[in-house]
Image (cartoon, rainbow, N blue to C red; front, top):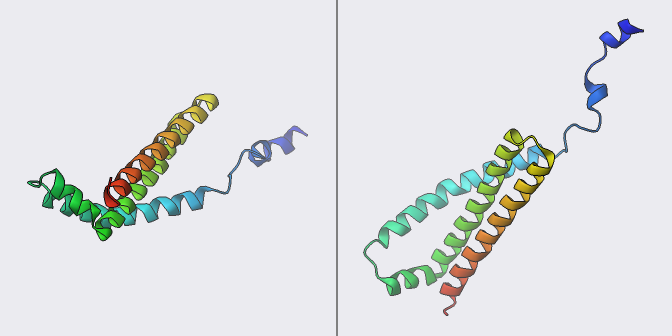
Length: 130
C-alpha cells in the first residue's frame, strides 16, 4: 500500500482548493483596460498639457465639452478598474494570511469604487453645470 501512495499525484490533496475559474476573465479584463488606458492616457496627457496656462473657468469649460467629459469618465473608470485588478493580483500573490487577504481585498475594492464614484461625480457635475 505504501508503494501506491508514492505514485499518487498531489491532485488528491488539492481537490476543492484549485482554480476558481475566474483567472482568464480577470486576465482579459486587465489587458482590455491596459489597452484602453494606452489611448486614454495619451488623450489625458494632451488634455492636461493644453490646460497648463488656463484658469479655472477655461478648465471647467474644457471639461464640460461632451467629448472631453466622456473621454475623462472613460479614463477614470478604466484607471480605477485596472488599478483594482492590479492591486488584487499583488495581494493574492504576497498576502498569505486568509483573513488579512480578505480584509485587504475589501479595502482596496472599496477605495477604488469610492474613488471612481467621486471622480465621475465631479466630472458629471462640471459637465452639467453646478
